[in-house]
Length: 120
Image (cartoon, rainbow, N blue to C red; front, top):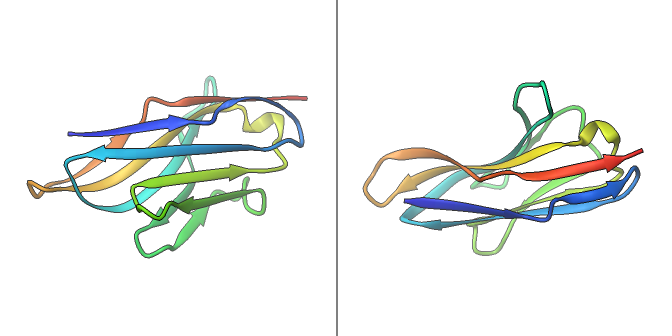
């Protein structure tokens, strides 16, 4: 199986920065894409940013110019640098990985979530 372990959430004032990290481990043959999603109370989970194995990125309009997604040298880690944070960025942030297992199947995995709270 595959595990995604996230870190880096916390409490920050508006205008501040946080960096989220996510490391994937387990029976991974390759990772097609990794991304970050978030879910605020009473709202649906939404895409924040995604990066493919080729390095292409895509961002939600609400975070463009403020957040940057990147992958580590090992390619099984993903980071989300969040700058100029706003109270509306408050949510639980989830790491996602589109994984090709050694056994063959392509499976979607999720991390446990990390809380980001931005105070005004």
